Amino acid sequence: MGKFTMGCFSSLVGSMSLDFAVKLSAAAIEKGHKVDFWVSGNGTMLSIKGQRAFKDYSALMKPVQELMGKGLTVTACEACAEARGYNKEVTMEGFKRHSMDWYLASAFDADRVLHIGGE
Amino acid sequence: MATTKLGFIVQRPPYKSENPKLALTHAIASQSVEVYLNDGDLVTADIAFIGDGVLNCLRNQKAMEKYGLTSTESHIKNSLLLDLNVMVCKEDLDRFGLSENDIVMDAEEFGAEITTKVVPYSEITKMMEEVNHLLFF
Image 1: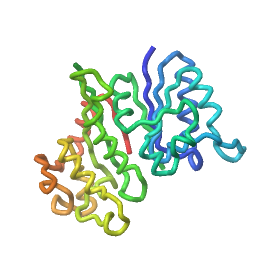
Image 2: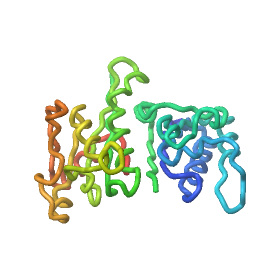
Image 3: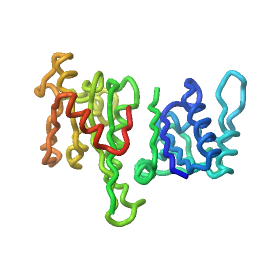
């Protein structure tokens, strides 16, 4: 099985790109691949705990937590998160925070890299 | 020992979105990636500005003066200082009526030894074919 590294820079609310990225992660994990998922820029909104699931807004905390339980590694850009006030205290359990070189290091030995830019 | 080549393609204009700046900061992060890798392994970053993205390269940006923010120009100069390959599409510069005189070509004041390369799109395509992974911003 392969290693899939994906980066997504779009926000949780206001775009469906993160929804797509989470669904793609689920499909890859289901097939037995290792998935590293990096969020940067507005994408770091995904890391916040306490997301309330309204039907009119994307709410991905539950599927992300389920995927982490199945082996998904999901990491937020620490600087991007801190700049938005998303500090460690509001980060959901299991969500990693690193500098941007983590993403590049993950890409180093990935079989496929999919980069989904921001808004 | 292995090297993975990444190509950062910037196609959006500056300041309208965060994308161009994130492209540059991620590319610059290639200089510190070794902490995660085995000895001798490398990640290299080539940066190419195409389409509206060439506007990121304009000289004399006033982001610090007007907004108190590091300019995209400054990030490009840092990229040159770190010996990253910075390419700008000549055809797209021409479309905006711009030339080398209008864009950041060097960062001598930072101590950079290399310069920006204004190249035909065919050279950027060649770079895109040579890298292991492409990231579009």
